[in-house]
Amino acid sequence: MEEAPLQKLEDELLQEQGVELWVKREDLLHPHISGNKWRKLKYNLQEAKEQGHHTLLTFGGAYSNHIAATAAAGKEYGFNTIGIIRGEEHLPLNPTLSFATSCGMELHYISREKYKLKAEPDFLEELKQTYGNVHLLPEGGTNLLAVKGCTEIVQDIPIKYDSICSAMGTGGTLAGIVAGLAGEKQVLGFPALKGGEFLKQDVEELVQEYSGHTYTNWQLITDYHFGGYAKVKPELLAFMEEFGKKHHIPLEPIYTGKMMYGLFYLIREGFFTRGSRIVAVHTGGLQGNAGFRERLGLQV
Ligand SMILES: *Cc1c(COP(=O)(O)O)cnc(C)c1O
Image 1 (cartoon, rainbow, N blue to C red):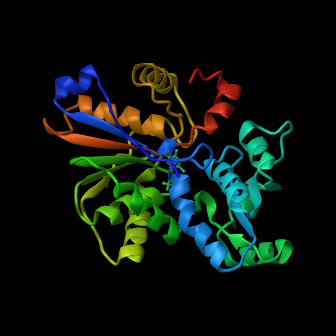
Image 2 (image 1 turned 90 degrees about the vertical axis):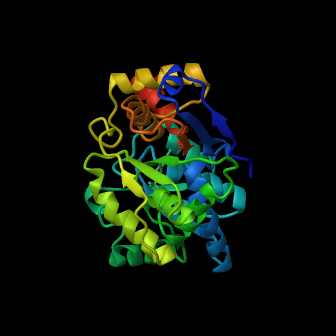
Image 3 (image 1 turned 120 degrees about the horizontal axis):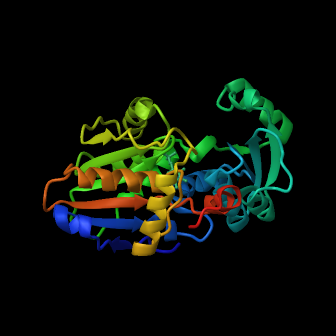
């Protein structure tokens, strides 16, 4: 596994506001098992091996970072992989799914209706009947072993800092960060979905189940979803492009672009006291940009 180095940003806005911003480049952890998805898979792969499973089965949308990461992890660590994909097959395959199949993942499509059952015990039993003795991983990879893996995001940060930020989908990554810090620092989570307030309870439950503790040093910043999950706006794309040029750090529009946009907004508004040191976790997900380039002519 590669390192996830810290990169300090040089920016006029940061100087004006008297804050430091460091990006934790989890996107560099692995070329294909990107960022937080690698953290989330790590202990799940160990468990699958210990249980003698040869096949991983998981779920995702057609552009899912978790599908791409699971396919790559299966190839690297010697598991067969099956991806249950939401919606109909579209040929030619988009870049995410064509990457997944190139890693050997077998794809099966199910209707959006049926996909909603993805966590129901009866449906999971049915999948086991169909596909045999598979190791099931939930959508987005979030479970307690994923939380354990994500606690390691904060284990090797070699500077002193005050606040740490992460994008959120299911909240598994944030739960790991919160549990790993055990009440230290200020933790900010930026949901990529509209109405992300519900994640408060999900994170609380994951942290409690994993660590047996409840912490209060974290909060959600729910204003920067740009209309909802996978929705983008021109000002977001423009921000990402400028950010990429200035700092030489690629972002993607679903998670990290929205978090960084929101974080810059908070900094501009004086949310952080002068002298603060902020760490922003780059959770990866850059494989998704190939699909965005195809659909939107994205320039990053
Ligand atoms: C999946 C993903 C997230 C969300 O992680 P959760 O643990 O589901 O909250 C954030 N950023 C990127 C780049 C992702 O791929």
